Length: 297
Image 1 (cartoon, rainbow, N blue to C red):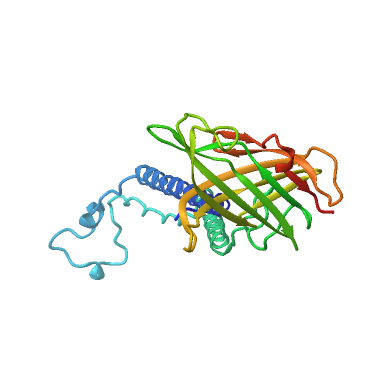
Image 2: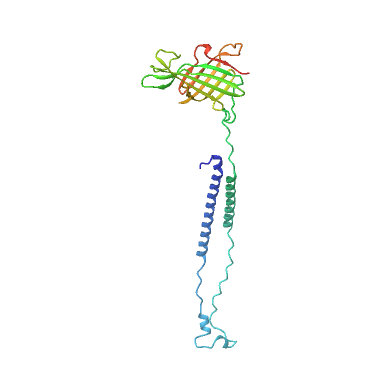
């Protein structure tokens, strides 16, 4: 299981503390062994007991010591004095300090482990610039509407010719909810590029595809009199007399539109814009009546 960087920090600290603790323990052990070796090398080997004096006082065949007269004096030299008992060595200061340091490091390591186990990861904030995936929201005011007609784009390339479409987009907003409806009249053309307008003699009309998208999958942002609309549109086909079924086509669209004229009595103004899909860019058609915008207040 992968750990985020914030959660891995305490574990890294714990590993470092335990590593230092092992180094200190090894150093203390090595120092104690060296000290014991020096003490063993410095002590002189004990000499075997000298029984000459006992032999002179009690030669073989004589009476035991208890039967001798009190005034008998031994002529043998006195034996060597018994070695004095060495006092027990106290603990060395270096060993005591090493033990204390090791204890402190172990306590710190345990505290770090407890902190790592009980900590809770911080909540991942929602990326800036995009609406939350909770409640549907839109950057456009209620009453904002747009209807746009674009030049042709290539949907598919064939061995001979291409399949093209001339996208039409309708946007409405109401009660903070935005809805975008995409219409794709398609045609098969014996050309390598999409014609700017439908009805080209080299093209034959084909089926029409539809798609509808709402927030939060649909993103709408407003900057003054300019709108930015984007989202992934999965299209469907509607054969006559049957229910809509998926076409298998998904288009990632980004549309920009802005006012380009005077407002009429209903609040609509001529609009211009661009549609981008992949590496293709299509502008709105030149007829002003095909593209218009009404901004909410």
